[in-house]
Image (cartoon, rainbow, N blue to C red; front, top):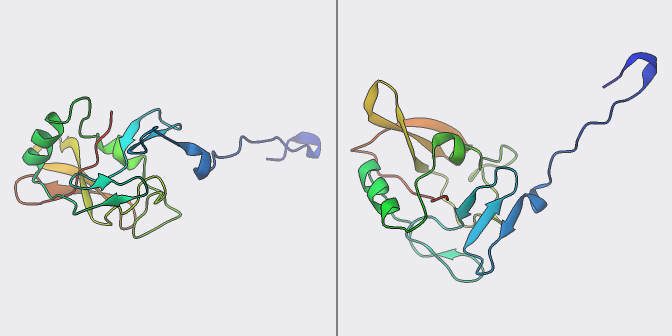
Length: 148
């Protein structure tokens, strides 16, 4: 930004994607240093094999997703704002850091956020290009990524 006299004001550089994520000792969780949240690297149904997420991703209705999250000690379903913070708009199919979150589906992931005034719908994040969408809680079957 140019200031009076032609001086240039330095702007803080964006945090590089490489340094944004810190991996747990076991590798199955990742802490986002930008937000301070810790995420499971794999979608529900997958397991971490030391190098990647393997296995089939589970699909849940919204109520099933909430119930599943409650069985995972210390983990929970993220809010729409939290899950949306993982969207990487420089990528697509999936629009997420694939090193931190390998084998992520480009389709929808549930959040804990429901639509005000529309209790039959909850917000979901689709990582195809990173958009947030309202999804029918009882009929849509989407993926889950947990946070703590």
